[in-house]
Amino acid sequence: MRSDAQLLLLDKAQVHALLQTDDVLDAVREAFVLHSRQEGRVFPVIREALGSNAVFGIKAGDVPSEALLGFKAAGFWPDNRRIGGDSHQATIILIDPATGRPVCIIDGNAVTTLRTGAAGALGLQQLARAESTRLCLFGTGVQGRIQLKFALRAMPNLRHLLYVNTAGRPDEAFEAELRGERDIDIAHTTDRNAAVAQSDVVITATSGRSALFDADAVRPGTHLNCVGTDTKGKRELPIGLLNRARVVADDRVQAAQIGESQWSPGTDCMELGDLLTGKALLDRQPGDVTVFDMTGLALQDLTVARMLQTKAVNCHSGTRVAWPW
Image (cartoon, rainbow, N blue to C red; front, side, top):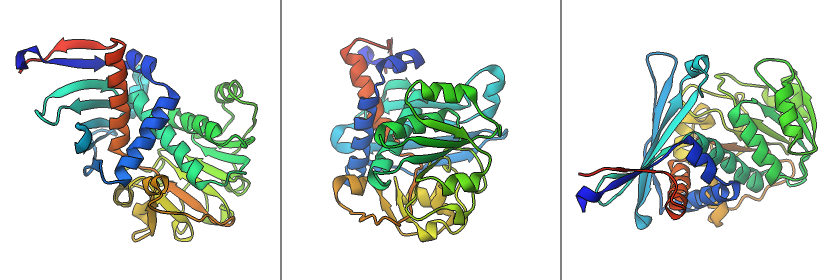
């Protein structure tokens, strides 16, 4: 009955209690597969600057065959740091496609972090050379750290890390956290080009608006996971690099609008989901430079959110409020 309708709320603590790495990886893989099979749709992204220095966006989509519909409202509010809050904010809403009524509201901060890390791991597994041992990381914030965590999980041969941060000096807390998880050689550097030239894998997870290094620093055989470019005007890669790379995106249309591909119109591009389903094949040669242009799919948010909703229902977690209509 409409008068008996309830809304399930999952706050930050409840989401953290329910999130498990393997479950997130499975859900994100499912999102890419649904996208490849055209069973899941992603709608045009809304991404706009606000009057201050904040950015607000909405990513929405659905899977009609599974009665899955919803969106994530998210963005970046750097002034939150002044009050001890997270700069990135996200809220996910799942909607009953039969009625248009919301059924679940989820704090989306941790979901966004982990689902992006999981997507990065899938990209590495498909594109990076398995024998890779040296990694260069740009950015040691929340997303940089989760990308690194998933990379070390996906590529057990990684043994050496060079990292570049905005502070321009070693981050002792970052290094201590990393050494607590894995025995790896860690070094901070300010020589960006040398760091890239020495690495098999490069991960860029910054909020910058200009190239992080020179194109000729990228050696043959290098793979790059590009995380930070998710808005018009942002970029992390140098001019000309995509022209000599084999480029894979989560969604080629979205990447051309707000990803690294916006800077190289007409770039030939595969989609990761097609590699996962076998719809496309990438015969990687040892000297190929590969790029994963990551802009984030609404379907990733929705499949992880549905997983959390199902878990919460099964274990009687979350807060239920009356939501009659």
